[in-house]
Structures are given as C-alpha cells and as structure tokens.
Image 1: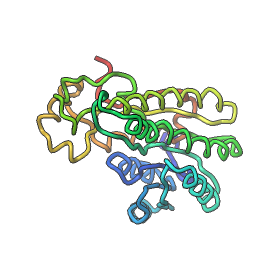
Image 2: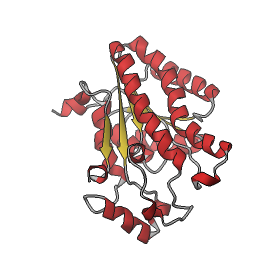
Image 3: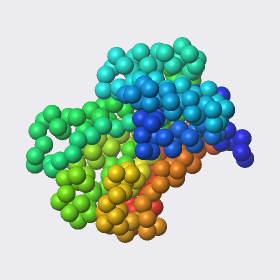
Length: 262
C-alpha cells in the first residue's frame, strides 16, 4: 500500500510554498519523495526553504521567484521548470493574495485585488501548466480553496473587528476556485489530467492565534473542538498528488474538523 502514496520522481510545483500552510505542504510532499518546486515572491526565502527540504528528505527541490499576478512571471517560471526538471506532474495552487475590510467600504480596486489574488492567479498558472500536462497526457492539479467558498462566515465570530473580518472577496474568489476545479476536471480528463480542490478551515496564522478569545470562538464551531494545524493538510495533499487518488477528480474535499457538516 505504501507504493500507492509514493511520490518519488514526481515534480510538484506549489505556489506560496513558504507560507503558513505552504511550508507544511512542501514538507509532506518531500517526505514522500517528491521533487518540490516551490514559489514565492521572495527568491531568497524560497531558495532557503528548497535547500532545507533537499537536505532533510534527500530529494531534488528548487525555489523560484514567481508572482502569479504577472503573466510574464508565470511564463518564465513554468518554462524554466520544464527545462530543468523535464515535466510538471503535479500543480498545487496554494498562494493567495487578499485585502481586509468591510464590503460597504470596498472600492473597485480593493475588490479586484482579492479576486485577482485568488481565482485569477489560479486561472493564469493552471492555463500555462495545462498545455504541458496535455503533452505528457497526465497530471494532477490541486487547488487550495476554503470552507468559506462553500459557506458564509458567521459575523458573530468576528465581532466587527476589521483586523479579523473575513472579507467578501475572499469567499467569492474561493468559491470560484471550487467551480473552476470542476470545470478543469470535466474538460481535461480525456488528457489524463485530474483536478481537485481542498477546502481548509479554520487554520489561522500564528499572528491571529495570539488572540485567544478569537481562537476559542473558532474552536467552538469545529466538531473536533479546536483549530486545524498545518501538518493536518499533508495527508490529503499527498493523497491527491499520488496514484492513490487515480480515480478521484472533480472533487472538493473539506479539511475543517467537521465545521461544514453541522
């Protein structure tokens, strides 16, 4: 059974690979043998993370600078990866760029930043990688969505605090990612390409976790009575990246402690 989850020799491109969730995802992939190509807008940070993964897990990892809001960055980055590694077997669209604020205060630019930093970025990179995967006649695309792409945030959790508020364009962008995931699954299955999304919730970053009252309110909404830890995304990611999920496509899988099942 262990061979089903083996990622040895697979080249995995993951955006936002140095972030709160991305770092754990990269560790999970590398631990199962993947050559992880992680992106960040900070090249030095990406390179340090890749070197650490390579040393720890004895895989061939690489860090590249890539800003998914710029088509030119995507073009150069993907071309470089294919040239150096030969293929992109798995794409993990994890990076997200958002804005804070309340809906009635948003101007068009503020709204657009959140949409561009979610669904538009996923579209741009997926479009570029699809052409490579079609040539290979195989590939797995994994999009990181959110439970807030499925349900509305409960205003009572946020108590009117703009620093904690879940903005309207975040959930809208994540919902679009879930639908886009299904679209890609439907239209590209004939090329051997699978497409699935993961909807985490809730996984507050370390800064937010300093607010113990807020974390307590989040924990009460989970069936398991706690928030999620980044390491708890490793298993589902390895599953969807590996041959263990060879008959899974077009799915959105929640990793939310049961939040959306109440």
